[in-house]
Image 1: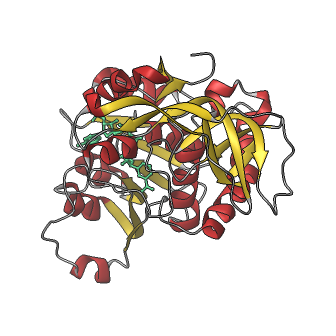
Image 2: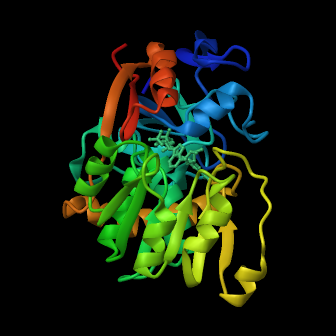
Length: 331
Ligand SMILES: NC(=O)c1ccc[n+]([C@@H]2O[C@H](COP(=O)([O-])OP(=O)(O)OC[C@H]3O[C@@H](n4cnc5c(N)ncnc54)[C@H](OP(=O)(O)O)[C@@H]3O)[C@@H](O)[C@H]2O)c1
């Protein structure tokens, strides 16, 4: 297959608001050892892209400085040592960066087959959210069937994914979201109750229920002590972001007296091997959920790659429910 030598990409021209995302022509990446090049049809938009754009989430030194952590398309080139894929295979993949572009490079073990013949548009929205949710609620959070699970930001890309995966695992699922309308959508995805955090206190509900076995939180700040109170004995709090800040005063005695676990992780800086392990677990456990209809991708809106700034305005307005996707092929 002959590749063009240059490609369209959206770069972060300077740290700032959505309008700093600018179209640029760049050389097509060259695959390193164990890497594949994917010609992207679609790329998913995630909150970490907006944080990187604003200058508060630097990419790892080895990653492309372009934004874009996930996408789906066709394998068009392979570096030495690749044996999982053939040229022409359709894949969705987790990228260390660079997916706001026509071509992007990733490790071969971070690409997955398209599950259940899903359209590429939907498959593009799976890797970043599924890797994050699976690794944090199952591998780290040890969610068990029958346990009460609470996810904050239930209508987000992460939230809509966590609700459905936890439900498919047999947990009793609860969530918070910022409006009654969002809460009803989250409940339609399998949450027993979604609390509108602007009008309801999830802590009151936690008391009535006897506490949550696991909480997945992206809010932080004042939510930290409230989350600790809302955990059941032996409960786990897994932190994946701090939308309201990472610093807070906390009485840790409760952690000791009630045997709580406070933990968290970020996906992007983890090693290739760690991401490969997560990829294999996602393919083995989440892809069958999609095949049997227990999990569907919730897409809020789609924009051409060149309209990435509008996609970021939409993300940061918090008006969205589920995922925002960029169309890359055919632009
Ligand atoms: N650790 C990792 O590896 C990792 C990986 C991917 C994403 N993340 C993080 O996970 C979060 C979700 O990512 P995403 O891409 O799905 O972004 P997103 O769709 O923009 O989600 C952000 C959500 O936070 C909600 N929110 C804001 N304040 C809240 C509050 N006080 N209580 C409850 N919900 C609140 C917003 O909904 P409302 O406005 O309705 O409240 C929105 O749904 C982001 O913070 C992102 O940085 C972490």
